[in-house]
Length: 222
Image (cartoon, rainbow, N blue to C red; front, side, top):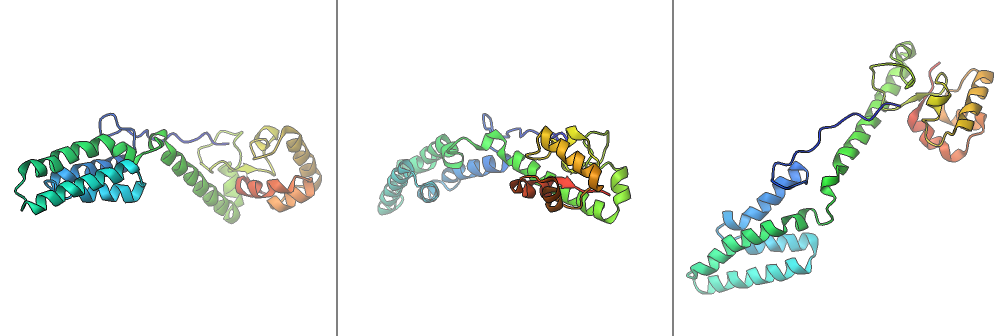
């Protein structure tokens, strides 16, 4: 099976930040709103965070900032220290808790997004390789689609050609043990090969629970 393609590691743009770039940028923008708005949007900033995360701390913070904002309004915005607190204090507070708001479980930095993207990319590669094999089997054989045991350049997303791959390659299929691989090869030699995962499971007597996974990773070149 193809070795996983290397993917670029996320290099944080924000110091000491392991969140993906788009989330880190969004968190910084959110945290800067109190300062950029001169304190006018501080209550809204924390209220929005509370509505999103439903945190008691955010609820209390939003209530306090709304109270300070109301005090400033009642004073005709004449309370400079209050607006300064809403602006600078609210911004500092937001920066202190922005990771709790945008990455509360600390999972953004573990590379899940990259892993999901890699799996999706492998799935697309398998679909394209199957489409090519169905339209031009000869070219597929020349490209060695489904032959992880042979040197090749074409990336097929991890397909295994059940009709030609050796025992070691067959064991790369989900749920296929060495004994099942031997059985597949024996039946393959007797019947001349298979045309689908359903036929493979039925003729070789494989567990029915493997059929769906085999259909995802197997290809049947003739």
